[in-house]
Amino acid sequence: QPQVDGSGRMIGAEALLRWRHPVRGNVSPGEFIPLAEETGLIIPIGEWVLRTACAQLQAWAKTPATRHLTIAVNVSASQFRQPDFVEHVRSILALSGAPAAQLKLELTESALADDVATVVAKMTALKETGISWSLDDFGTGYSSLSSLKRLPLDQLKIDQSFVRDLQTDPRNMPIVEAILSLSETLDLLVIAEGVETEAQLVALAGAGCRYFQGFYFSRPLPIADLDRFLAAQG
Ligand code: C2E
Ligand code: CA
Ligand code: CA
Image (cartoon, rainbow, N blue to C red; front, side, top):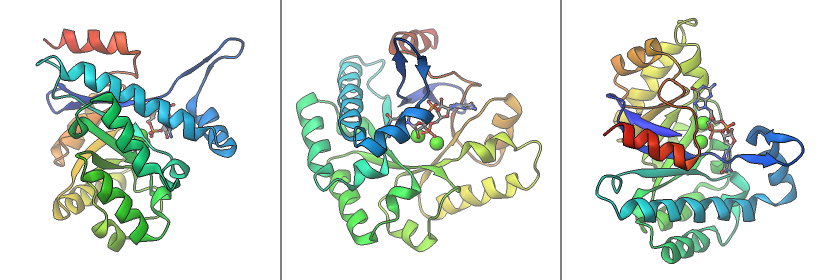
């Protein structure tokens, strides 16, 4: 799914898994990701997602028109917890030849619930390869502001629940503003997800948000359609 700036220009994409089952049709990740986590299959699946994203980055790096694009990959808590997670990502990056600076890893707050020192060490080790870190679904889980300060994060993602009810629930705007001002203090970028309407975009941009993702710009697309989306931007 494209991620865009305030003028709608694509700055990158988030990799979102799809499973086309021969009998059951499209199975949503909301259904199969929790199962994959329970069974441990999330480890090989997660590696495949990373390899596929890195191959795409490597392809984009060859063309001036696409080499600035980033790909954000979701990393589940159990994947991040693997003792050899850092080594795995490093070797996938090295083997693919993808520019690490274009790879973004998205963690949710549940991945950060472990011992802060361990989490910081892992994140720092990978950051040294050039990748960046984004905190997904921000504001919905548990994260202490003091640990947030210690983590080598680059970006917060404003959760779609705050964006969705922006017009209907007046309490959401102050939350969005608080996230934006917090991120400025901590020197973090912010992206709002789940942007579906122009009114939401206007409200978010007015509050100082500069990056966006959501159906208003584009639904998640197969890679061939994403290339067409890009080409249409000229
Ligand atoms: P997420 O990381 O929070 O991803 C955003 C979800 O919001 C995606 O659902 C996306 O299709 C949906 N979305 C995007 N724009 C809009 C919008 O404007 N309105 C609405 N209502 N929804 C929007 P999706 O693709 O069904 O994925 C659900 C979750 O599954 C993801 O939530 C993520 O937690 C997980 N997931 C997907 N791919 C992977 C993966 O490769 N690895 C792991 N570990 N988890 C994944
Ligand atoms: Ca995500
Ligand atoms: Ca999210």
